[in-house]
Each structure stands twice: as C-alpha cells, then as structure tokens.
Image (cartoon, rainbow, N blue to C red; front, side, top):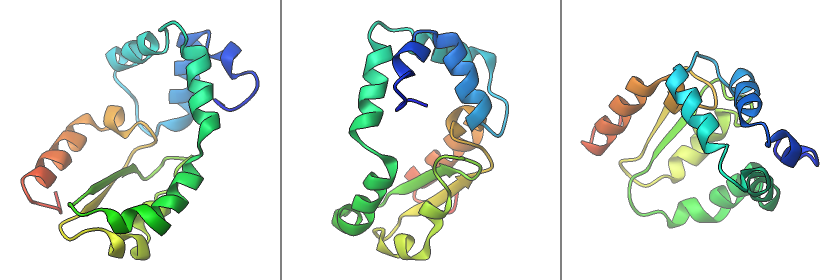
Length: 141
C-alpha cells in the first residue's frame, strides 16, 4: 500500500487511509479516539511523501534477515518481542521460530497478542500488562 506509486496521492486523504489500513490489518476493534489520533498523525504536512519514502527505503523482510544473521547475536540485554498473531503482513512465525528465540539474550521473552498489526490499539490493557510484567522481571507476563 505505502510502496505503490499511488501512495502519495492515497495518503493525502488521511481519514480514508486510516480506515482502510485499520480495516485490513486489525483483528479487533479499535477505540474511536485512537483512530482520530491516527488520522491527525497522518495529516501532518509532508506525511504523504515521507511514509512512502520510508517504506521504499527498507523492507521488513530484509530487516528480519539482518536481525537473524547479524543483529540478534549482538544484543546483550533482555528483549521482549511483541507481535499480533493475526498480523497479515508480519507473520508471527517470524517471531516464534525456536531458532530465533534461542538467539535472544537470557531473560528475553515473546508475547503474541490475539490481535492484528495494530496490537497496541487492539489490546491496550494486555499490552501495558505484558510490558509491565517484562520490566518487573516476569518474562511470562
């Protein structure tokens, strides 16, 4: 969506872009106030060119290859991987792969939300509880 040649034109309509993205990428409903905030964030001047520039300069798959082959081994502190199980663009298998989990530093964890791409908005209480638990040393929170 954001890498298409039409992206700058599509992004000029922040409200429609937000509704389409949240409809396609969520598994749970999102609070209306959060949608309004997202529309406001996508309404800043220059967003219609900045977002496609970002998405065209990198790819999630390439970043994930680099993480698996080079970056994860360099991590020294515990990390908490957070991902929506129903995210259509970033399969949870990328995160739950036992080989990947074995590379993580001691004390790390993985939490898969029963949600889509926008899990912080789809499951805000669960997200906060999970992060608090991890920061308190409970990797299974």
